[in-house]
Image (cartoon, rainbow over all chains, first blue to last red; front, side, top):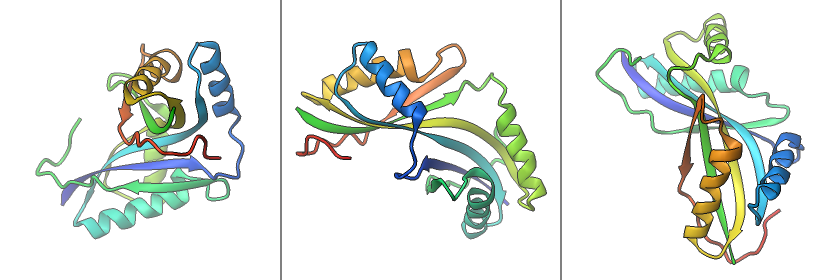
Length: 92
Length: 92
């Protein structure tokens, strides 16, 4: 078993409104930061998981992303590939 | 003016509890995905902004992150550096 690190980025589909992002964009203007053309808020889930190899780690992460981390009706997800196996069994 | 793209990653400080992340980790087990050692949920804010150069873009993004996107009492933030200037003035 190796320990893999991964990040899943979950973002709203482009066709879905993002009221929190719009409110934040407006607040940026009031803070004196102009020129913001787009601002969308998504989730970044950082994981560490044990798996026998990269294929198994990827399979687990894809299942998690599809079924638990993202709502496929309104969200897309992307797996970031800094899945570096380490020799430690855990990192706190 | 050039258009810059950036991503700000906001994560809870390691000393701060993440009940949503813990609940998600437990749900992963019930879904049949074992071996998850750590799961922390943060935010990923995708931005497009206009600035005269990279220094100004960076200054704006640092101000936004410190004052608006993250709560420095409980959160850290990191700026991802895919700030590629484009020739277009806006992208919808």
